[in-house]
Image (cartoon, rainbow, N blue to C red; front, side, top):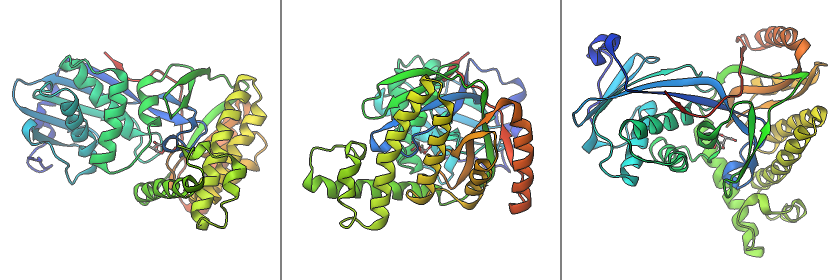
Length: 388
Ligand code: GAF
C-alpha cells in the first residue's frame, strides 16, 4: 500500500479540494446509548439512537484503480491501490481499508477507483461512535457510487467486521445498527441476538438529555474492551459446563449466576453479574420511558453507572466525579457514563429549566478538580445514514 505523507501531499495538491465535486454525498451520524452498556456482544438489549452530529463524506469515481482519501480534520490523506488493500499502521485508515476489504469479499470487483473527502463533526474518543459513523458512512457511499446493491443489514455487518479485523476492537453490533437504522425522534430498543427492534418515541418533557464530554479518553479503552469480552466468554464457558442451554450471558438468571460466585474469579463473576443486571435494567428503562416514568428511568441510569464503575470497571475518575456531582444536583434525574468507557461522555437527564445552570456548575467544579474544560454536546435524535 502506498501511504501518502503530510509533507509531500498538501491539501491543494492531493485532491484539488477547492474544485472537488462529489457525485455522492453522505451524512453519517454518531450515536448515543441511553442504557444497556457492554450488552450488545452479550446478546442482550440496548437502547441507542442516531444523533444530528455527523461525519460528512463526499465521493466521486476517478476512472483508475487507485483510491484517494483525504481527511479534512487530520489535514492528511492516503492513496491505495485496490489490489493491495491490507491493514495500515494508521488507525483511522483501517476503518476505511477494512470496509473496502469486506465489500470486496461480499461483492467482488464492484469497487473501482474513487476519490473521497471526509469531514467529521464528531469529537473523537467521546463515546459517540465516530468509528461506526465512519465505517457505515464509507460503506454506504461506495454502495451508492458503484451501485453495489448492499442491503442495510450487510452494511451493518461488514462495518462491524472491518472494526474487528482491521482496527482490532471486537465491538458489538449496537453502534453500526444505530448509525444505519436510526430514526428521527426515536430510540431503538434493539435485541442484539436477532436484531429484532422496536422504535420508542424519544419524549422526555419536561426533562432534556444532556451530553457532557469529559474531554478525556484514556488509551486503555480498546485493549480493556477486548479483555471485557474475553471475561464474559469465560463466565459463560464455566456456566455452560453445568447449564449448556444458555447461549448468551444475558440468558443466565441472576440467581443462577450467584451460585457461581465462588467458582469464578472475582472479576469474571462481577462482569457477568453486571451484564445480567444491566440487560434487565434496559428492559425496565424502555418500559419506564413508554409510561413516562422519568424518575424510574433516571434511577436506572444511576444504577447502570454504579455497575459500570464497580462491577464492570470501565469508568474513570473524571466520569465518576461527573456522575457523583449530578446525583447531588437536584434537577438531574439520572446520569451515567456512555459508550465503551475510560473517558468520553456522560449522558444526563436534566429538568429543562435547569440545564444551563447545571452545565455551568458542573463545568466549574470539574475544572477546579481536574483542570480540564467540560464540553456540553447539544444533540437531537436524528435519522441514520443519509445519502444526498
Ligand atoms: C463501543 C462498542 F463499539 C459497542 O459495540 C458497545 O459494546 C459499546 O462500546 C458499549 O456498550 O461503543
